[in-house]
Length: 132
Image 1 (cartoon, rainbow, N blue to C red):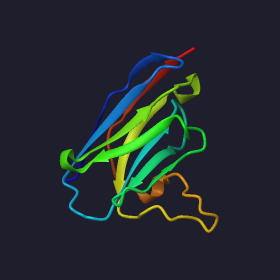
Image 2: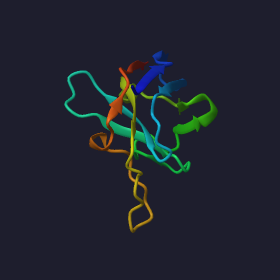
Image 3: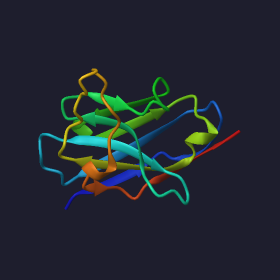
């Protein structure tokens, strides 16, 4: 049984930092993509924030580039999202997810952020609130 457990959310003032963690268990495939997504209250879609493939390749949404960093510790089966220079518009429920499809690099060389439909296993989320 695949399980993902997020932690590290909380309330911070604008300009502050948080580090989210996601511990994964039960996922047996050597090739995978881990993604962080966020969804605002009442929002219909989960926005892909950052992704990291099993080979270490990363991708980010334009709105977080330069502020957020995704990383993984394979020995701990944990993926992290370091969030710096937080803004009120970063307020959302943050979810981590794992899937088998790697993020494809576009002909332009750009690696797009992860897409929720490509991920089959999800955590329950951790709330991030940024006040102005």
